[in-house]
Length: 277
Image (spheres, rainbow, N blue to C red):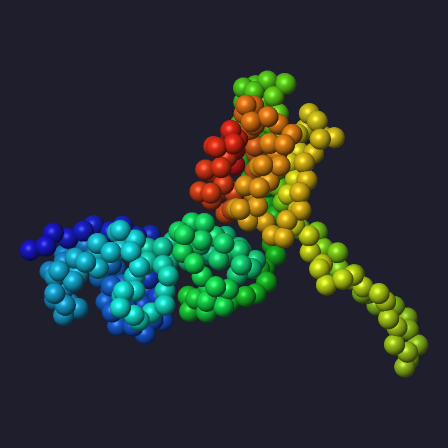
């Protein structure tokens, strides 16, 4: 008998796989998803084979494919998915916990995270199939976490003590100001069409900045078409125009997905930059 493979899935990953199972029309993909889900519940390969009416070696291949992160879809056609079952579940979990504003950002995240290529129309269809819709989030009053604030202050003080007064510590962040003219109400005679000149078609800026509290006058600012992992790496290069490569530069940044990408972390190490989230 083929030895079963233990698969550990989070509840979110299970829900993602079940949703994918319900929305795909390829029976072979459905079998693979069912095999992964049943294996995560402790079923043996023999039990899964009997339930799905397929051979045990096929079950073993399904489970091996998932573990090696091969594409979930068959190589000889069928569904157009570019991600394995595990990657799909991880992506759904990430998008559930993190708000990405554009499909282009999602395409960039997938390319950086798994080196998988999607077009914007393709990822839009994928998002709809996975139960996502494009809508505004609900605003709620922000609640401060006193414990996290204190931990940050302690960590920041420890970092300052470590590097000393003469070494730089940079805070970097992105801002997205808009240039759009906002029209408001006013008293206008009936029948009159009142016109006001508005700004051009480009209404949004994407700016990255690096601030050294000891030398505010040397704040580094660059504008990019979009803020993503690639442009964060380019911004690291701009930082190195001010600080020599031989000097380690600690950088404090938020937990945005592109900040934590493998690409950013790799080039931070190459450029002698120390990341603190």
